[in-house]
Image (tube, rainbow, N blue to C red; front, side, top):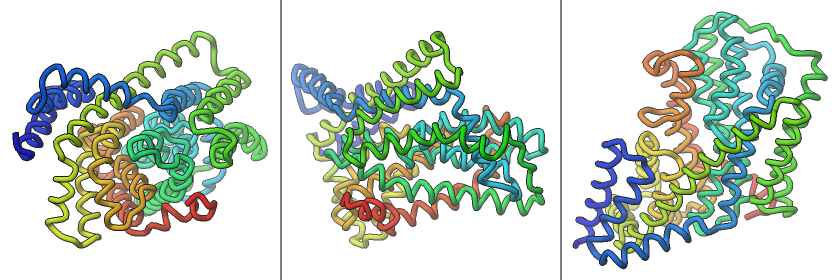
Length: 433
């Protein structure tokens, strides 16, 4: 079968299965098997598929993924969110739309701790939404600020997205990726704060009086133990004290001790957290396993090279190629979750990006940034649905308020794409590259 027919077969079967509502991991695996059968025998396909699925998750680095998921779930149920909300309110001060600003800053802080955009949207939004409602905030305005800023935790480390990318990209340094995510993450959060401020001014919103649980020093003191997690985990990984996987284990232990000290976790709730973490981890690891099989099929058929040659045949202009890649990834992010998108499109686009002088570190940041925007866009934007549920608004109500955020975040994405220093300055400063 020709390369064109193989490519059409793979993506046609995959698209049809997704349209029928088949889980994405099963769709990936089924489309890979059907496509492989066009060239190989059934015995060869079953043997190679199982082998690739096993080797795809046979990585010490990937152990960090379920551990960081567990740490994030403990934090989400461990009383940490409320303390970070108080700190965010204190840091924001008296500005128009201050509660929305506190929400954004809180998402940056909590997202950096939990590594989960959905956890940040639910934890921060759940704490701040009632306060915003009491102060007469437009629910759509509040929900849009929460939704747009929640994915910052996918860029600000520690985050499992970079660990998955590192595995697929051939063992790119996780500590370097972590450091590369800071400035883009702050850029994303800062862009959201700018939009929230401008919208608040136009709506004539007044600063919300800051009501804190205790004195200023108590608020800071209560938040320090939570923030120390970042120092311990990231400092240990970058300093070489432990690997990313060991750092994830330290994060679990630290969060558990902190939750026990705060008396916000019980044995029953801990068992529920373990069960939920196991379910989420199983879904993600099976996705990685299935995507490994698809990666083999694509490589065997020569699909990445064909797509690369196709793009390069259109133009040799670096800026147009990178722009096209961003457009494709933005569209992909609207329909596909972050993990399978990383696993499928990294081997396709990374070689193209590196041909035009982009490092694997900068490409990883650009890819994750694209997927952050996919988190807030329909039809598969998980953060969009969670944020609407927390804010008690419909997608139709929040969309007009969300569009300005999306426009500014796309501009920030283009800055990350075309200004290498945004991603590489901190790693270079620390001597990591």
